[in-house]
Image (cartoon, rainbow, N blue to C red):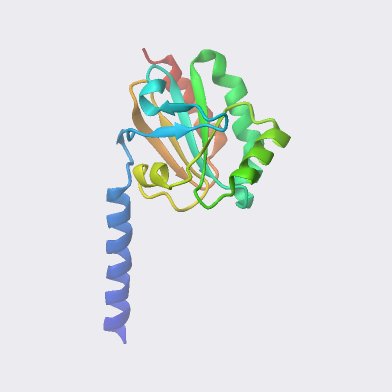
Length: 165
């Protein structure tokens, strides 16, 4: 019995370690194409020179919906200083729900729909929402949040990154 529990614990640690190593934690942001609600496309390369928050979310995710006002105020606070936000709706989220949510909440930042799941896959097999990445001006991922970020910490980090040349 103890041996079985030990082996199960080792397996869990191994799986978690493997997932963390596969996910882009720190390093270059993956080359991705974001298809925005208006049909236009932007790539990660288009954001070079700006600090970018990439937020994977879903309209059915209560934490995602609850954090949206904070994401909006963060965007409004820093956008004039070279900060951008892309909210990437997960592939299982019906596009009509995403459009309706974006319009009724008047989301001020870019909203993308990941119909095929390829963007979530490129960013480390994102499955849990919200998952948020902070990318610096050089296109390097500097922070990953699973769940709602600590917004005070996030704001300090954004200010540091905006101050860098």
